[in-house]
Image 1 (cartoon, rainbow, N blue to C red):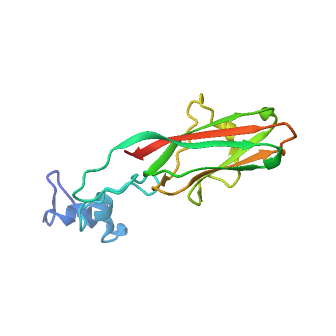
Image 2 (image 1 turned 90 degrees about the vertical axis):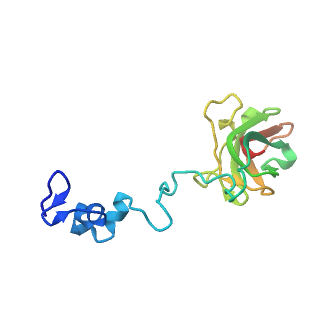
Length: 191
């Protein structure tokens, strides 16, 4: 079918679905493909979703008729894990946020007698879900307080869900040596 500049075909003017549908994209696309590709209105409105995996889910879902809660940057403290020759292989630091929270910047401090002689490995968990891309633990010294862009952005934890940092020391601590691990994870929280 031939078209002129004003959008008229040899059969007359082209309107509506003809222009947006199969005539515009060709028969090889199928009857319904043209509308999907060109963004035709679907039942329930326009599809304006980004492809899955490109956006982070909201910290808490919106509820009709209610104003969205304010979100602030709040730290989640984990306390201190003190390791000696008695518990030489490691332990866990656990925090339980009381509001919905999503971590973004992890800060880990390591101190103690001869602590520099030992590797300090860490595996963060939100509930029972690992935060890391792989199964292996990472060096806890990768997250110093003075680090630039050492962010560890996590999934959100609802109120009452444990956020755990599993700490492993290698090799086992010798007599008289200590490793003190302190952690803070700054993130978005409902205030």
